[in-house]
Length: 435
Image 1 (tube, rainbow, N blue to C red):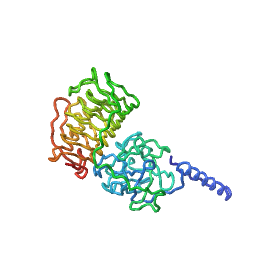
Image 2: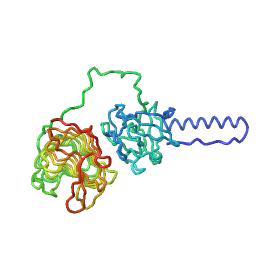
Image 3: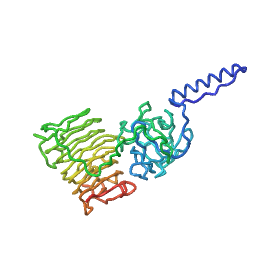
């Protein structure tokens, strides 16, 4: 917490003044020591990379987007413009503007709530775009929003590339500290123990589908309120869950309560309506061998709700893989999909409609497939897409982002497709093909 020094009025002779001055200096020094953990001065205005103290990954704008409203994320440091931030004094703090877009880091909706997304915004000088720097040690600082007093943080303190950035209450957790390195500089000393082998290149092909560690029939919905780890066992439906068709309103195999996590599961056939998520949930390393009605459906939530699918894959989906019916953001990353209709669809005809947001990061898609994502532009939906590899689509039939005019009754109408700067947000350089 920042503490303002108090002016002390002289009341008497030289001795009293000296005594008061000494006490004031000691008090100020102790306050600074406990408030910052260091006597380090704030960095000078200029351009910097900000590396998270926990993960070592750099703060950046996903996909080098120039669009306002893009939520920031961490990724491997590369010195690119979307990871370079111009630090400019503003009142008692600083603004941070991305070099690639000249837009400022700010808290979405000027919120003071923990967990709210930090995004790039048109620079306005508003308090939600002003950050104070609390020294931790050396050139490492906590970055504190002037509007709500909360710290720049990686969601769930994740060390994964692509993890999103938000604000949270300030404490000593290392993911809430950032190391500032002047842009264009390199470390003066090599690593203490350099690796003996060259670094491993990122995968250039789809991950292999996993083998099941046994199978188990499921005759009634599994309710999950904490974490369910399936140990890579194959679950398949029986009884009321024994349909493998596309019938609407089938029960799910697994139902996740708000805040639940599902991980290390293979869903075989039949799979009924897959997984239902009520509110915030995390799905990690889950594989759908033969999608039933949908692989997963997301409901409920609020505008700040973020649901994450990390790893895994799905195949043989006649229509949708993931259905986003709720409010907030759905993130799908490090995921492969084969022989499908749409990877993600924002509900086109739900009785209650609102703006939904979808992020696709590091996706392997194998044709045939109709579209990676479908959104309703008339309700303000957005899709942000990066690092996609498409296989076996020599005619380039697969659409990346399809736009619809959504409705609350009847059927939505398709009105176009392709990148723009408002709803379907990606660049052609983010899409590669392997024929």
